[in-house]
Image (cartoon, rainbow, N blue to C red):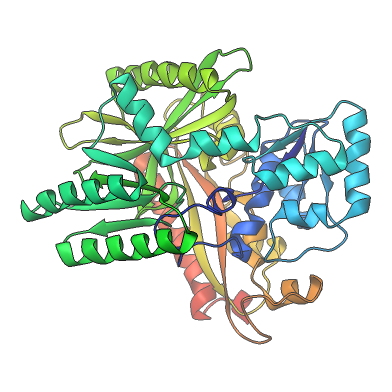
Amino acid sequence: MVLLGNFEVEDRWARGEVGLPRLAFGSDNVIVNRMDEFALLLAAKGDHVLLKADPDADFLAYLETLGFEMPAVLTPSRHDPRKLVTEDALDDPGLCAELGELGARGAVLSPHGVSELEEQLAGAAGLPLAAPSAAVCKAVNSKIYSRRLADALGVRQARGWTCDDVAEMEEAFGAARTLLAAGRRVVVKDAFGVSGKGIELVEAEPRLDRLLRMISRNVRRAGGDRLGVVVEEWVDKRADLNYQFTVGRGGSVHFDFVKEALTESGVHKGHRIPARLAEHQVAELKDVSHRLGEKLAADGYYGVVGVDAMVDPDGGLYPVVEINARNNMSTYQAAIQEAFLEGWGGRTALARQYPLRLTRPLPFGRLRDLLTDLLFTHASGTGLLVNNHATVNAAAPEDGAAAVGASSTAGPGESFAGRLYGVVIASSDAQLTALDGEITRRLAALREGTSSDAA
């Protein structure tokens, strides 16, 4: 397989669609574009991974010490930090030719998700897609599809409405006003929003009216009547969940796992493993997975499916908040979970991101020295297992200068934002909390300039 981490493919699916104002949309996030490095731990021996740039050699060596066999890495001759990895590959005829040679030997292209860009790359390289068409993937990833499918299957959902046109939206907003008048809150979602983008929590009618005017104006500008919006009542919850199942080409459905999702203002921040659920709750999710999977297969989809769900304050489930028929963040943690959590009774883990503020690039070697005793090793069996280092320095000025003259988010000498992704593994909840706190403290020292690595 040739794996491709084209994260936030929803941005491509959203193009040409009318919904919420797209102020928060756009695929020019240089940090998100380097999330492509997650694909390293999704690959098996003999696979290839297509990345925007070569990984830090010390980072690869670190992963190998943990027993992970690294795939062959393919990179474009030049890359633009503000472009998706797929676009970089399309701009490199030599790389496309190399991909074509792999295709001739039986390799297939396995993206994070499929848009028209990945179809173009497959066609240009002569490398078959190991996934359904972009049209199928886009259709089943719409939040409108998720809601209607759950309705058809009789799966519990928050009260809500799907809107394909202006008339449906006006009717849904009218129902939302009734909820607001009763002291309830509502949420308006763009059909292809992702990770906190394209979602508005509404607590008062004036805000709802402004949204109606803005969306209606966008519809008029588009010259039609079509749009894609979901309106739902905001419900109380005790926890967020993310569970994954896989649909086979022949229609089989396999339940993979469930994790407790950590979110902040609708933005995904990580996972707690294992999820704190009773057996009957897991059984309900397995049942829903098979019912969803059968319908997805009938609609032409196969591959990984991640579903967001919620636990209400009384322990009841909302099994389908939305369906993501693509890889998910939890997909890229599966190898870590299998190697270091399953079968190790009592171990618990926290998959999360740590925000950074740096004044110069931070090589993995210096990061390793900074965290030292906090990094996961076979000997300790606990600590932080880093699963993406590229996002640490993605916005560094040097990266921008090295990439065909594209500008980065910071100028020379300015500080820049970064993210460190990893999985904290511990033998108890108390140790997990302590490890996470100390990791946060040491990384904060970089931001505050109190660490020797901040100079």
